[in-house]
Image (cartoon, rainbow, N blue to C red; front, side, top):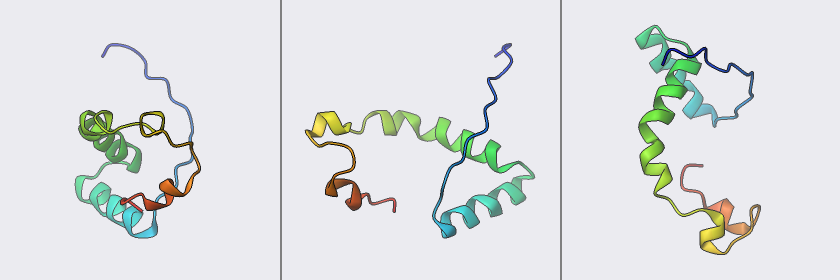
Length: 72
């Protein structure tokens, strides 16, 4: 990883309880929120890549099916 990372500011929105949990973990590990979220993404990515995309389901983005997201 000898490259300089491409750092861009981005706003992400989390449910209040999830954000509290991320903050607690960041404090416990003495790490930044960004570091925790980046590691979580890296760990979860293989599972997320196995999930069907909206095109695979034949649904358009923004449909009622999105309201049934179990993470929310």
